[in-house]
Amino acid sequence: MSNVMTFDELREDVTYWQRLLRFHGYPCGEIDGIRGKKTQHAEELWLEDAQREMVYGLFDGRTESNLATVCPKAQGLLRRWLNKARLAASATGYEIKLIEGTRSYARQNSLYAQGRTAKGAKVTNARGGASWHNFGLAVDFGVFRGNTYVQEDEPYKMLGQLARTIPGLDWGGAWSGFKDYPHVQLKKYSKVAEAREAFEALK
Ligand SMILES: [Zn+2]
Image (cartoon, rainbow, N blue to C red; front, side):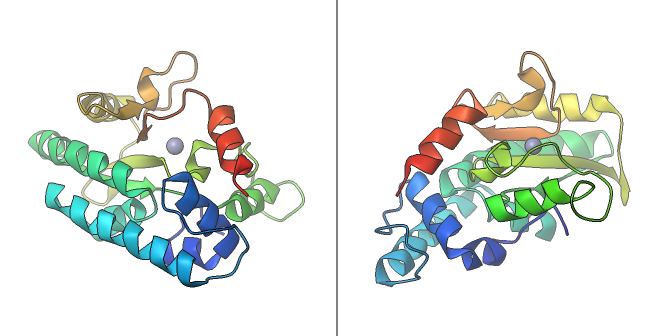
């Protein structure tokens, strides 16, 4: 089980996908788990908006795949940040890639089960609805030198800081309390519980 979901995997979970569409302002009718005309139309609008945001830059396949899982508005803002970050990274011999995007509640719950009721090592302390990654708002980035994933905090601080220069984006490294340096998200809610309440209130 991977942390990472593709856009197609998200939309296959129709109930979750309908909720995500509604949450980001794409009316798809009732959340009924049926891919009807309204759902298809809402999905087309999402994809058109996402396409439009591509004027802000195109990136490597892994980054693009993760970008596709967040709402179009976040995609646009993240592309603007990634342009700056890509330049800053290459000037210091690094490469930046998005390595995580949105996870459905179901995927989050299966990850939570790992190391608890299912085989494997623990990978998360968050159940479905308890992670910022469950709402189509958030990504994590990785810094690479060649093919090697960089562990040190410094390049994450430098590149994450740049996200704060894009109005509308929030960087996990600027949070009071736990600093989540690789985490960048659309600034829409100040607490994950608020996002969750709004998300789950949709019927
Ligand atoms: Zn994150």
